[in-house]
Length: 369
Image (cartoon, rainbow, N blue to C red):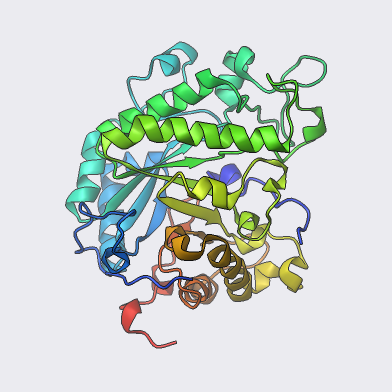
């Protein structure tokens, strides 16, 4: 997600709940939170914002974000640790040294995480997986290629690494392991998919028998491996997926099957930015102008898919303007749409760390629909 990554593409061409008890306010004790708790009433609704690595690395910006989150009665922060261009902000990873992908955006990662946690905030480290331009260019043996053997790139010129390559898996899991050691409560994998925003008919992978079926199986296998290596470190796991996976069942050509992947992680975050839906999706003339209906219909479908596990849903909502101005009314509409289908957790996204705090309903649990 990042600005190009926050708006990674216009979603693919049109494809046509269980209520959780919550604890609001950043004063809630989150260290004892158990996503997989069998007692549903003990689950805490996680509501927060995404923060860039550069923002998290600035003491001044950290202090301001913490104050804003507490004032808005939010309790979580998602921090970017690796971006779609391949730059990453976690020290001590051997392959990162080899390819030069480490950038000192967060000089003291444990201290940064510790400040958020000391304020009672649940901390999530976000790691982009297979959209990795830097690694693909410096280790072309790990990249997606075209029929001519050259690097395949998407419409924006970004190269991808091959999601079948186990060395790529090990690299990203090693980054996640270092992040867990720095104190994060949770690791979130983004771009856990095959390419979509380009001429994917030209993509050539290390598996000659690549298909929708093998793509979906590879993502599941990656999550199984990540879970085995990371769960012993005491962190939760989550994934960020296309918004339309809440409705579409065919993997969308990128390997993302919501139900299959959800069973291997603690949370699922569909990126439900209304600006990213085609006109006419869900029968809505312009989803970008009708965020309430767009979110309501998408999360209704997701809740039906996941059934008793719908508490895992923690969607990303749009807090930026793209084609339509998004002020407090449109940001708040997304939150209320989720609430009315029983989805209590969410994350706001703005690529510049500028959030519409006035859009967040105060004392949401006491608010009548």
